[in-house]
Amino acid sequence: MILGGIGDETEASAAQGVAIAAALRAPNLESIDSDAGKRIRLFIESNPNNNLPSLAFSALRIWPDGYPIKIAGPNIATAQFPVLIVNGEHDYPYVNSADRLVAALANARQLEIPDADHLSTVFDERFKKAAVDFLTTPASDQLQLRTI
Image: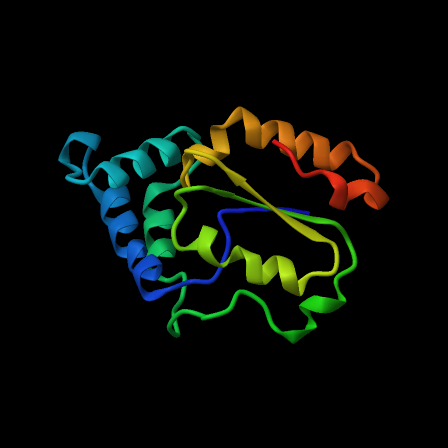
């Protein structure tokens, strides 16, 4: 399993749902006043099958009962399959908390992509290479893949 842009949620990161929804509901790119909002809108629009109103609604409802402090419960330790967790160096707050998720999993490792954030990591060639290496390496050798 490969997980990207993941870690513990915080009040600040959960509040980003409001900014994401506003960017997706804006009439056009020029009317979005934040750089992050524009980048998110461009990312979402890069797939013509995405439905902006539906994704805006989802962004507002991602944590309907508040946000979870921890990403996983106590049974996560029973997962025995290899897991690669990838975050950009500037993907806050996730990059600061993914180590707890790695520690909770028996066969996980974390990869931090230098000079990348939540969106740029997806397009980064180092992420693509790490994903291919991870998926083509036998499970018994997974934890030895440490470089990007």
